[in-house]
Image (cartoon, rainbow, N blue to C red; front, side, top):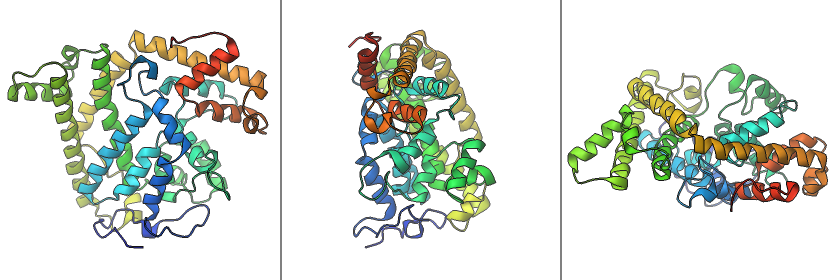
Amino acid sequence: MTSDTPHLAPYASDPAKSRGRRHAEPPAPTRNAFQRDRDRIVHSTAFRRLVYKTQVFLNHEGDLFRTRLTHSLEVAQLGRSIARSLGLNEDLVEAIALAHDLGHTPFGHAGQDALHECMAEHGGFEHNLQSLAVVDELEERYPEWNGLNLCFETREGILKHCSRRHAEIIEAREPGGVARRFIDGTQPSLEAQLANLADAIAYNAHDIDDGVRSGLLTLAQMREVPLFARYHDEALAEHPQLAGRRLLFEAIRRMLSQQVYDVIDATQAMLRQYQPADADAARRCPPLLRFSDPMRDASRDLKRFLFANLYRHPQVMETTNRGKQVIRELFEAYLARPAEMPAAYAQAAQRERAIADYIAGMTDRFAIREHERLTGRRLFER
């Protein structure tokens, strides 16, 4: 197999030095380990389901709003662009970005919150843990083992957050594995840090676009946010004729570009300061992928604005509350009548966890149909 890693910086993750897979496999003749992970993710059932999973707006509310799938693609694009400038491994960043939401429930964060409430006495529910469960166990594609059998580095990046309690459970069954860093206080790979930051950048940008497209936000409102106002006004100064969607797109494009440049500059400064000799040395440093302090503060202000004016908008809350109701009532129905689920879930020893796995894997529209089938009530218009 030819190597495509000479361009990597010393602190980047090298697929030839991967910590390997849980089940040993011979290498692929034409792809390195991280490329192989990316391809497995793209071909997975869970990845295809993301096209009908809510980001902010439910799928039936409009064809052009972001879904979990388009969000993941945008994160991957931003991540690869930044990785290339920093000498990091683009394939690993892309694999993590494409997989980071595989465990997300229907109906966005509202669905996750509802399922967590249902599972409160059974270990709770958290979509990062669920994403890891999807790639480790729930995908059924191979004859000899469950899951996708991804590399340590990809799995490490997928497990973005983890409580101490859950980390200790994972550590007990996988000593020194992907949860160890939550116990010893080290960091994930720089590629994992980058995928996490690209996720935040993508969120802010596309939620502005979708918020204005939906009519729940206006350009006038967005100009109350200094980060957006700066690039809106710059665009108008250069193109006085701009208006409407072209003006919105140009402002977002400039904002995205500047955030990317800011991350590159701020991270390069951190790399010069700490000079990690290799990928493992980078794990022992403080987080190195970062915004500058002014951009971090401006990004937080934007997130707070979106939370107050978009995510908590009465129209969004109305639909997400109905989504929560669907999740709760599905959980109750399956608990009372497990035979309504496929046999593999109905016969599982840990019934509540099996129900959570089944519901989490649903698309929005399948969950709505199942809810109507089991309750006789329709909470969403078709």
